[in-house]
Length: 146
Image (cartoon, rainbow, N blue to C red; front, side, top):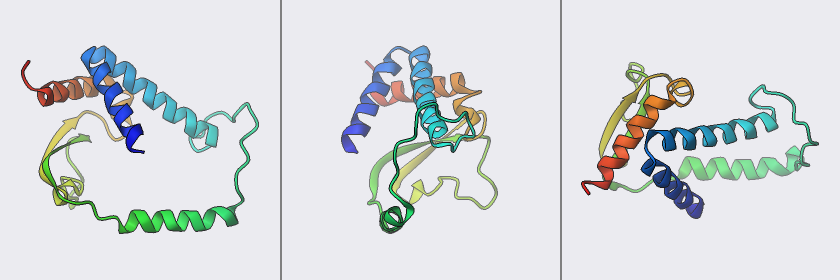
């Protein structure tokens, strides 16, 4: 998993170097890939897969693995992070009563909240160009002068 995240980060930086167009292309490709996987699983309400679905383990064999996974995720306590985390929030503000840092304030020393137009879904579809511009600016700032 760590190698996957490293590859993702490397590819994101390469596309960011190409500017807004590179980031937009990257985001569209990643979003399209994710939607394609969801449609293949039938979770997106998209067209039925054209190929025969891969055989799935029966539910009785999956249930223990899912229980273990939920237990692991539920019991994971991240350590403190001494740096700044940038939270990109789709929409104007979190709903009343929500932690404005979405829990990141319990982990990171500093949380910067960047608002982008749209909601969780439309910020990466309808408002993708605005999101790409924000991310590009954040990456330039993180790289520092030079």
